[in-house]
Image (cartoon, rainbow, N blue to C red; front, side, top):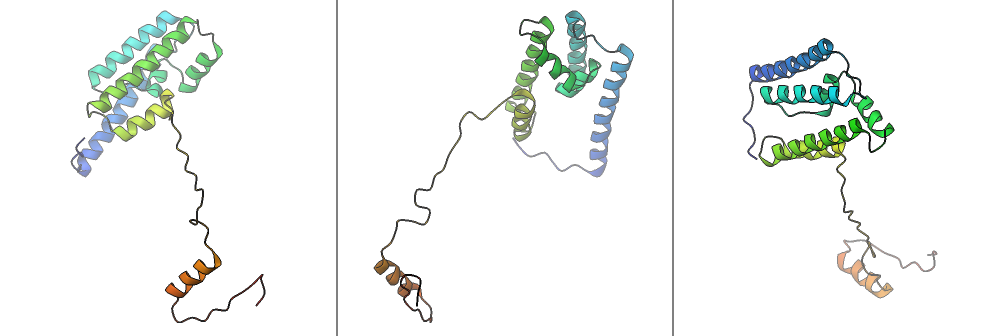
Length: 174
């Protein structure tokens, strides 16, 4: 993915203003529409469609934090709901589908160069449960190399010594 061109201070200011404006819109939507009862799967679905249409119209990827706010909740409330309800609970299953959809959208955006790959991987791990499935273990069997005899050590010492006097030490005494 090519590096983006350097932004001017004015462009950065405009980009930050757009992000804040979007956040204000999400909060305003949540305030106007009120809190969705999480047990009401149909209301959750309706609000989800509203949120996804808003994301599409504004050209932004959906995210868990904004989604929870649009529902009138926090991400931790949604997570607690998922953890505390059975796997057959309709709303829980829907939340899991939405989560997988958001993950897929982020992956597609990264693959198409519309999202930073490093951020996408970090976000997938932080928000969508991605884990490394391989662990590399490096073990040094002989971290200092193969053991050397006393004679080999003396030869190396003599080879690399620089004007120094050495005394042979046996069994810890001079």
